[in-house]
Length: 132
Image (cartoon, rainbow, N blue to C red):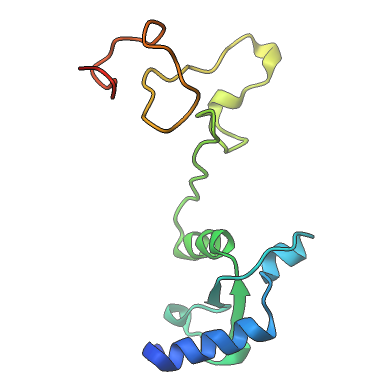
């Protein structure tokens, strides 16, 4: 396995590469202009990639996380939008409207997230963060 560059040397290389290409290459391929925040190995070191400039590319945090998860063989979890609905378009809650099914609604509201719901309208549950 290739020894990974670390410390100040890594930070100098990272700064130089980001000065040369400050935008995420994967976002650019998709037609999106977004600043790169991380340097990624095109071929991961654990798969025999070299720790050279030719094997490095600038990526934004989201693209780097997605690429890393895919390389490791894990499933990409997209999470939820601001309303608590799944962001994954293939999630079973996102069935077509014509199916007649409605997605389940959240039972709990955590502080600082989602719309404010008056106490009288909230369900009394054990996970209610405002419950005395």
